[in-house]
Length: 319
Image 1 (cartoon, rainbow, N blue to C red):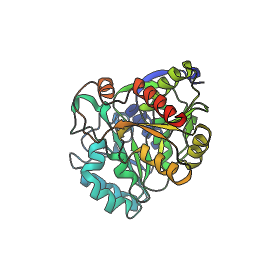
Image 2: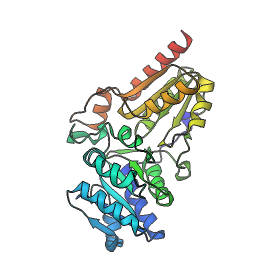
Image 3: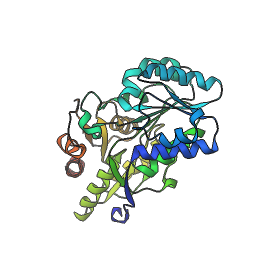
Image 4: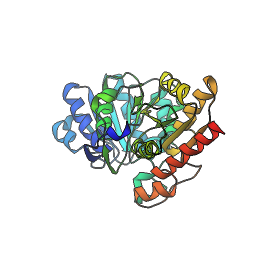
């Protein structure tokens, strides 16, 4: 039951990254951190204080940062690059493709301030295409954790995961509701069992899906909420097991519905078990400046819209 999920605190996911990389570095001397002039925003202060010799300030030169990181892997280092998601991907896509993905370098691309919830910085900083960009790169692992605990766990886990990784997290303070043990790379995290509708979600919208699921349960609708924190490699087995029961789904993501989690779920369903699907995400548009929660509402990524999508897909299934 979704009502049993308790909020244990509130903290931004980028702090989960900052605490995670510090903990990982204490047990793995090969971890190094690089940033493009965003040390404070990426919560690296404690890391730099404890491991100053393992930190590289690259300045506002993101392409150079990716090149340095690729080179460091040749000497056995595990570089974590850090900047905003927009500058981690869109600005340096060529360098990631050619210097990291093509040669399968062990670089961890850690991207904060993703999606609409970046807020007041506006459309030029609110990348909504990055999941699509990164999941299309051969060999790239794509991870989108949902809260502080899961981001910390993911940050630690990717150190032992061989190959390039894109780790996407956010800026705002958000509810904490998972346990560290709930995260395993490539394994979906089921939050509730249900038989009427599946809700597949990632990142900040996992909490919104939980809120929507509670409302639906009060209406007598049995909801299965699954946190797809690893977009690639996708847990196809968990997806198929869920939709085999419910025969319909809603996908929720803080990303363009073109190229994101929804497309991945739909591809699995189309190949193995076609079902009606409704999509929660931005609809082929850029964002704008505003308060994070107000932007989620304006662009249809909030709790009421997830409820509406679930009821609509149920109508399609039963119609």
